[in-house]
Length: 140
Image (cartoon, rainbow, N blue to C red; front, top):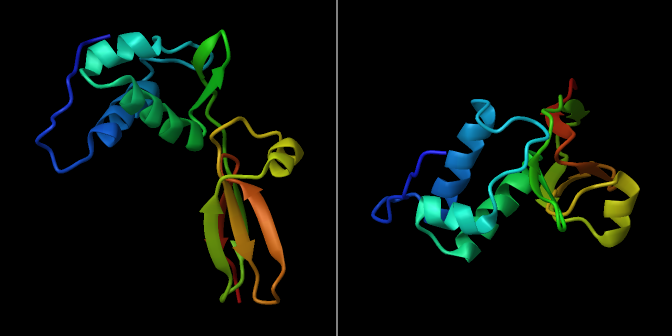
């Protein structure tokens, strides 16, 4: 892996620069599905950033469903998944948040993956794993 220090003078936060670089390497196939990423220590050296910055960047990628961290194994690249489009009616409110423990178990979510919460016009709520679903405007 080529050393790529981040640009601390950039308007883009350093953590997002690290996440962008790793995301691009995953999308370009440098890191393939099932492959374990380099250890946090090595990533700190490659990007010339703190361990906290690397961990935050990995949290971003986990939230996007690109990676999964397994204790004592490391962080591995997940296979690309097609997301299911869920149509919602006009007037629905959509937000994202981290799931409760019960929601993580119910949806079998790895740590770091958020849920989308759709509050329909009738007040009912629908919780969807953000790594598997996308919300689209429905036909009214």
